[in-house]
Image (cartoon, rainbow, N blue to C red; front, side):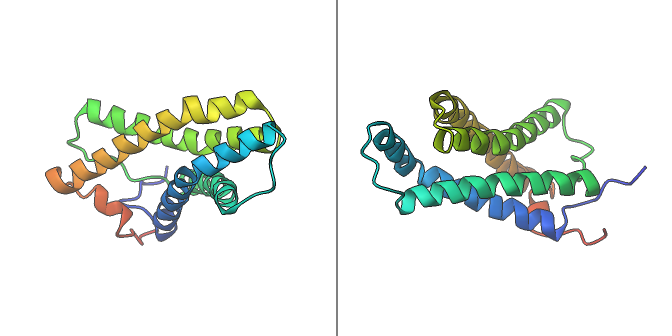
Length: 167
């Protein structure tokens, strides 16, 4: 059995931050995509603008990066939580990470089904069901990182800034 790494690899850290930037780009360009979808349904769509292109490219990047991150995690592993972390905090961190990874796959898939496949239900699931869950998961993730970094000073948050080059 392989020993769990003490930290994240340079690739894991890079993919994390590029993925975060892609999520922000997709979020910021969401209104352009919504307007384009409405225009498309009304027969008034005149072609993609910068917002639509940003949303599509960012969404596809989120999907590709999430799959890449999961494959790295499967091969390399992930650092364990601090030994003294309470069971509830561990469970919340695990649930948040599982939700984030699932959403980084589900959102681009439902978005692509809505945009490229014209599936209205997929668009509703994408924007009305999954988007709010993503915002909650991101808020929990950031709050947990800030709590570990600023309050506990546990070194957990530093894992996403300083790579573990041991493996």
